[in-house]
Length: 551
Image (cartoon, rainbow, N blue to C red; front, side, top):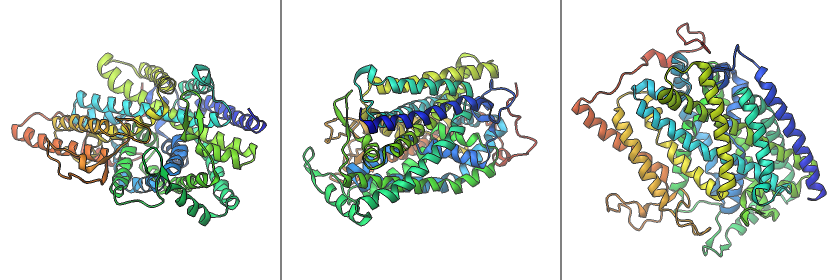
C-alpha cells in the first residue's frame, strides 16, 4: 500500500466512522413513541418533510453502483451508457401522479408495501405473494451491487486481497451497517443521506471543473474518446463502442431508458421512500426537485470519457484474476486528485453504497414481514412482532447480499441486476395500473405475471456476451431478429436490438387482457376491493387517515 493510499484510506475511515455514529444516533432523531412498529422502524414514522425526503429518495435511487457503473459503461461502450440520463429524466413526469395515489391509499389503510396495496385492491393473497417474492428477488442483487461499488473503492485504496480475508473490510462495513439499521430503521439512511449527497455534490463539482482543465478541455476529451472507442476490440473484432448511437442500438436505448424508468418506480425501496413522506405536497415538490440528481448523474457519466483519455486502467480483482471495470472512476480520482481529496471522493462513493443498501434491505424486510410472515405464518402477529421480524429479515437480506459478493463472480451479479429490472417490470399491471383501474381481473394479472416472467427470463437466457465469453445471461439487449412467437419470426434477419424487459412487459399485458376478457365472460369472482375511490386523493390532515403506529 502506497503513502497516497494510506492517506486516502485514513480520510475514508474518518468519514465512514462519522456516518456510522450518525446511524446509531438516528434512532433518537425525530423519534416517535416506539420503534416496535413498522410505521416507525420501516417508514420513519411516515412524517418526513420535503428536504428529508429529497435526500432520502435521492440517496435511494442514485446509488454507489450508479456512480461507478454508468461511467464504467461509457468508458467501455460509449454513448449507450447515457441511457441512464433520459430514464431518470422521464421517470418523474411518469410517476408524478401514481405516487401520490399510492401514498394516499397506503396512508388511508396503513399499507407498508406495494404487495399490501395489491392484497387490499384485489383481495388476493396469491397475487400479493407473487408481488412480494418478485420485489425481494429483484432487490437482492441490487443490494449486492452496492457492495460491488464499495469494493471498487476499497480495491483502489489497496484493499484487494483474495479469498475470504480479501473481503473482510467489506464484511466489517456491512456488520456495522446491519447493526445501526437494526437499531434505527429507516431513520438511519435518511440521516446519513445528508452527508452522502453533500459529499457527492462536492466531488462532482470539483471533478467536472478540475479534471477537464487538467486534461486539455472537453473538446480534446471528446475527440480522443471517439478515437479510442473506434478501435477494434480483439475479442469481438468490432469497435469497442462509439460516442454516437448506431442504427441497431437506438431502439434498445429508447426501450431500455423507458423500461428502466418504469422499473425504478416499481422497486420496493423506491415506494418505501415515498411512503415515508408526510404528505402529497412533499411528493409533488420532490418530483419537481429530484431531476437535479439527473444533472449530477449526467456530469458524472462524462467522467467515463475523461477516464478513457486519462489512460486509467481497471484494477485486477485478486479474487477473480479479471480486471474490475467498476474501478475506473475510483482509479481516475486516485490518479488525478490529491490523496486527501481522493479519500473524500472514495468516502462519497462508499457512503453512497450504505444509504441505498439500508433502504433496500428495509423494503425487502417489510415485504417478508407483511406479505409472507404475517399472511402465511402468523396472521395474529402484533405490531411489535412484525417489527422484530422485519429487523431480523433485514439482517438476513444484507448478509445474503454479502454472500453474493463472496461466492458469485461480481460480473455475474451485475448481470443479475439487469435481470432484476426485467423481473420487477412484471409487477407494473398489478401495482401501477391497479392504482387507476380494477378492470384487469386478478387471474389475468397472475397469468400475465407468469408469462411475462417466464418469457423474459427465457429471452435473457438466450442472450450471449462474446466480449466475456458468456453463452447465457450476457445482457438485456435482444436482437429483434431472434424474437419468436410459436416458431414465427416477425423480424427475421433484423439486427436491431430491443430491451428484453419491454418485450416481456408487452406479453404480460396482452395475456392479462386476454385472460381478463375470458374471466369477465365466464363471470369469475374478482375478489373484494378494500379501497374506495376517495381513498386515492386523501392528504395530510384528513381525519379519515389511519393513525400512525397504533398498537
